[in-house]
Image (cartoon, rainbow, N blue to C red; front, side, top):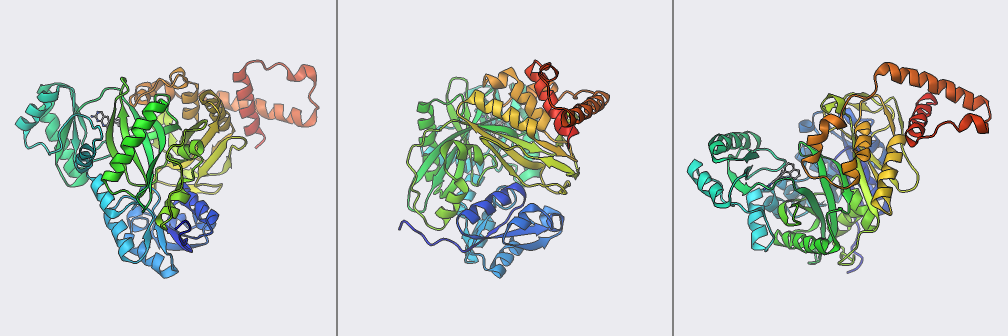
Amino acid sequence: MPHAPMFRKLLIANRGEIALRVIRACHELGISSVAIYSDADAHAPHVREADEAVHVGPAPSSESYLRGEAIIAAAKQVGAEAIHPGYGFLSEREWFARKVVESGMVWIGPPASAIAAMGSKTEARRLAIQAGVPVVPGTIEPLRDVTDARETAKSFGYPVLLKAAAGGGGKGMRVVRTESELESSLHAAQREARNAFGDDAVYVEKYIEGPRHVEIQVLADHHGRAISLGERECSIQRRHQKMIEEAPSVAVSPELRRRMGQTAVAAARAAGYVNAGTCEFLLDREGSFYFLEMNTRLQVEHPVTELVSGVDLVQWQIRIAAGAHLDIPDVIEPSGWAIECRITSEDPVNGFLPSTGRISFMHLPAGPGVRWDGGIEPGSSIGLHYDSLLGKLIVWAETRPQAIERMRRALHELRIVGVETSREFHLRVMDHADYRNGAVNIQWLEQRLPALTRAPIPEDETRLAAVAAALLAHRDRGVRPTRTGESRVTSHENDLWRRAARLDALR
Ligand code: MV4
């Protein structure tokens, strides 16, 4: 059955850049796309780019993008045959996946049973252990009481990490370095878990110090075929929010890639997985890796895998859901290097405080090896109803050093006026010796935040520079460049500053 019949119409239960990403895949596959939107998004790009759009409620997510029943009703009403959830919102809600299927439509994602199995961290651990997948030493059963916790912690030694069974995203997590802290930490973790998940079950693991976060992309079809598409390095994060991702990882050799890939596929099979998913691992300094959890959705950082594998993950999600056979080779060696910077409306100088406003001007980078997966345009209003991701700047080059230079070039081209953004912060990371050496782990960013987020040059100097640039631009426009006049700037740094100032002045 090489040619499964393709959907005619698909509804995207999401907004912003990921809605646009799915709309683009639909149009390449000849599928008609249906957007949904809240009051706040009536004029959003994803609404315009789709073939039709349905209003689902007021601005708050709980009254719009999270209204599963209303979204299913809208899909039925317009005659959509399938629903793609993107990431976040309803993408990992077991009940929603089930309801979509019960309503006679196709869910572009894993079976509800796989979402449920991987949603419980202890259940995921149990499945992994059964499948022979290495996990961090620790328990599966929730801790009964402090005595239980004390005995278990002692058995594999401090430091240990308390984790919420229902958890994920770091909530209900507590590092415990000595037995004396155990009791209060246990109670704190249980309280946090109860508040966040309505379930105070907490279990314990050996705490791994300074590991990398490396994840493996998996694709599985309905006919029993499952493959790995290699790793993404996701260590550069702050408060469990990834900022920069790349593929491949400097810490992964071809041999390690093969082993981690086989492991991820084994974990996926154990959960009865179908469609695209990601296995998260901790990779320690000795090169040992431990399965953490499986994300049962398309991920924000999927483009870096697409760029080094040549595989369109969103198209494959749709084809797989339509019943197609996964005809991709078992092993694809990554080709070149890809880096993604998440451009958010946050102010790094002010503790990454969300910034709001209207985009008054923007200039997007382009040229060789540059991709922009964005969800904004001039005129877009950035509020506080949704997350702060404005877009993702992704570059590809043959080598890692070339990819870093390309990212610097692209970040310098990028201009977003109207809200504060993380652009400057990304430039500083690209210039950091540790980043250039690939010497990072999951603690690196938070330890270096003060240096990476120091206030930029004072406003007065910026103003002066802008005036100087305006004069310079005026001169350039009127006067032909002469050999003597143009050859004074020497350093690379100056070139970059000058280019940036001209861009602003000529705006
Ligand atoms: C860990 C760990 C160290 N040791 N488990 C964070 C959220 C959840 N996905 C699991 N997490 C961690 N589990 C052991 N035994 C460190 C983290 C962790 C982390 C993991 C991946 C990416 C970023 C992280 C940031 C802080 C802590």
